[in-house]
Amino acid sequence: KKKRKMSEIRASASKTSTNKGATTMRGKTFSGVGNLVKLLPTGTVFLFQFLSPVVSNTGHCTTINKYLSGILLVICGFNCAFTSFTDSYTGSDGQTHYGIVTAKGLWPSPASEGVDLSVYKLRFGDFVHALVSLIVFAVLGLLDTNIVRCFYPEFELGEKMLMQVLPPVIGMVSGTVFMIFPSYRHGIGYPTSSDTNDTSQKST
Image (tube, helix red, strand yellow):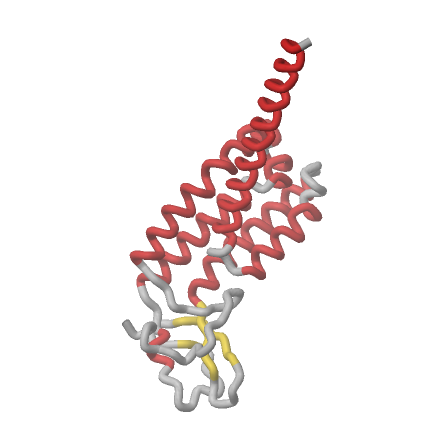
């Protein structure tokens, strides 16, 4: 009886340890994905997460579903890159205005009296941020469960492993890139700062 109890206790402890390990692994996966999502415009991420199961029919794709899913990926990927070339400022009317960064400054520029829009001009770092944002979205988008089931269902088992490995790796790489090329922009889809006219950092 004592031996039986000991074996039951060991089995229970082993099972608990396994469950804890699985919970920890899931926690790390969600944490890694969450950190990557922070690098993307919230509106685009929400749109993709909302429409992905709809256009892909929760992964049970017909030919039309595949086309729609592909279009959604392209549109969201383009938007992630495009928003890196947008910025905002507080105009003379007290409202927040968004525009596209150009070689000369921000465009369009309504209510910009007293605001030096030339400090918002296009920089090399904007292209770097656009590329990294596109890569981050590609990782999250192409490994989305509905997209995987739709385009390459045979890869579904490998998806779980990649979702555990890729987010931390991509997060580390993108974090390093953003450290080398810091961005002080507050474009479309990103939270604005308390004072979007604080251009001391933008001009550096």
